[in-house]
Length: 464
Ligand code: NAD
Ligand code: UDX
Image (cartoon, rainbow, N blue to C red):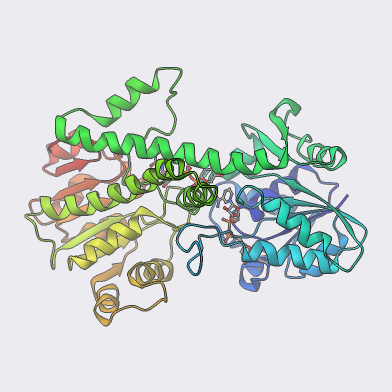
């Protein structure tokens, strides 16, 4: 038995590293077209920051885990081929801004059809619109090589920042397919470390749709509590108290009720928009509108946070220095895709604020590229004014203290643990008065900071 995975990103890399760790007798070959990414996987400085990942890769790499750009060789050798390529929202043509761009997954299928020999199990690991397996089967079946294929759907449920724990001890593994033998072959891989009763098998379409549905439900919870956070701010209710009170109802449960500046990440928005597009495609207008509201509420939350900063700071942030703490879309990752920080910073820059941004894992070049992209149109064009705002009004600094020095305000945009233990007295002494803290993650100790002299505003917390 040999495994290969096409796509060495946030999913392909950690998932295959875990399979290789748990199954030392199975050779696992991860391939990607991106040479730089593969070089990083083969170095001491992995392309993604994920707690515990270094150890897992170090244990398996060179033993039964290999990273390369040799896609054809990997396909030829493997019995099971995972496709873990990106499926971003389309930015052009029909369905732009909603539908998933299936270009990369189709290219993989075509490559497999071209070079495979014998029998292969092809596994959809990427998140895909329901019924994509139908297209994949047709593409594979049209290959001239005479190879035969089974197609399985095995969506990935890991969350970034906790990927290693999620992979080691998943709530469930989901495998959808038609061939019992193919399903059993993949079940046997996971069963090396996941209890069998947690390995769920379904038909192909249920599996594909369950992934979009899981992300829609999770994002819906965040948008629901964020909607309530706005009402809390208007009524002196406290969103954390409300979340605790409703979360103790066993039918609701306590998880994913943390109000925030808005959800980010590469999945939630993309997958809901994909679901919305599918519903529209099948003529289900009311269903589409229902789910779209989750994204609309999230956009409102991000915008409302930036507007709140401006309003509170006497309706002008022009030429004021604002410290931005955190740029990643959540703690313990270097991923910034769809991070709320991008949109808050963009809105503040357009109000002519000066930003000093600090994030412990996101490099300067990435922050600048994200801000430029956020100000560009779909064709990638950016006005001279917007470009100069990113170039002149943004500095990237090495810690929270430096960011706050001489600043009028601090905006906490990612919940990095280190923000809880900084010397706030010292920080207060270096800031302009009145010193504002806008806590987009409700992580700072409001009472203590208020005693020091800060004016603290949180999400779903009324007044100072
Ligand atoms: P990513 O962009 O980090 O990685 C995808 C990789 O695929 C890239 O390195 C790219 O170079 C490579 N690639 C694209 N086309 C290729 C081709 N034809 N041949 C070889 N390599 C190719 O994306 P990701 O975050 O790992 O997500 C991958 C899929 O998994 C997406 O469908 C996503 O929705 C899903 N997913 C992501 C997460 C997450 O937390 N990031 C979680 C669950 C599911
Ligand atoms: C998500 C899903 O959780 C995961 O199962 C799927 O495989 C990929 O998409 P991810 O985006 O990596 O994972 O992180 P997640 O922990 O879900 O957080 C997503 C966003 O929601 C983050 O910006 C996070 O800060 C925000 N969030 C999450 C909240 O604002 N409040 C919460 O209570 C939970």
